[in-house]
Image (cartoon, rainbow, N blue to C red):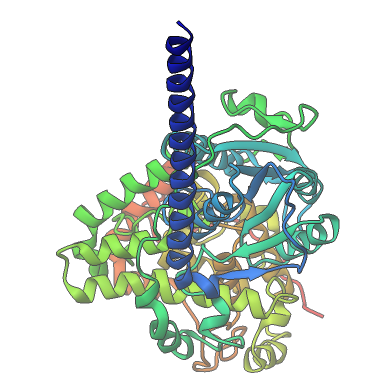
Length: 531
């Protein structure tokens, strides 16, 4: 019996050792596999070395419970280098990722208050992001409201390190500086809202598209790829304080917007919804139906020949890299694809270059080249045939029905046809008392109504009216050597389409369509002598 008991004991002891050994080997294999995966992930991120910019020299917090991904300029899952870096770092630290977006309630630079229109579009995108992050990456998104820099610094207290998707505007850089001074962990920004990192393209502000085009294409092809998807290994849920001002995205827009400082007079556009899913639908429709005739139709008012993706790019809901890759896959003629990519890649990244290197003056007339400033000074006392008040212009009450149509499209749909936007801006310069009034009014309208406003493209677009990224032309009254546009030029190019465009835009405002000539008897303010 003693021998029998000893045999059973020895067998159980051996099995226990075998089991422990097996468990050790399993854990060791899992750790080794994790290390191999991390090494592979690091290699996959090497391409984006120039996208990644350390903002401080502080070490990672070894006691941190998560990697904090500060979602700002690129609230999307696909084609997001900042998200992939956050996932890679989380695997190195063996912690989860916490994604955070803050709806800032304070004043931003010279922007007017946020509007219902823009916030509703933004909320659509955040709901889409929350769903996709959870479904595709098992990552939680927390949306807060309040002072952005304070809330991010609070969340960073318990993170290993902080990663933000980079913006280029002045208020964003101010946020980064303030957060950097408040936190004790490593802080990194990642350029993922451009194709090629801005400083890799050029070390200075570029004069125009023709001076930056070659520099962009020198690097663009190596960046026109989809980043590797990096899954987070840790699956525990990050714990955050219950005292934070959290927005529940399952609530209605009205409930959420009541918590924010929002201009509710600028209503959301009923048939336009934000988010990556909506952007992809638009992209697919554009590539299959509109792209083949893009070069012929894009400048014709009323034909809807453009992609309609501008607001989604503005809010970061879709990457320009993804758009270009889909366009290049299409069977459309190369010349058509090149025309579209020129606008999306070269013109857009020129605006990023402008804002980055002219950070103090991108929203003022000080940003203009010397030749444009000089010609505007010479024309400062030129007489105007019409001078309208800001209120008349905002309501679209001028003598020019084409211009009124542009303004009504902006006010009621949050967008404006690309070619007509140029005409719209040039006429404001002609119909206001001086160049400063014209510039400030255009900036206010762009930032108040446009779904694609308040971004580098918007600043560059308004500045273009006054000569930025352009060249000198024949001298004219009021304009000097700035590029000139008039209604006769519109009619010469697009006369057969203009009436339909005007009719549609007037109907948006519930106005009767003016079927007569462009000139009308709309009263104007008394002409004033410009001092």
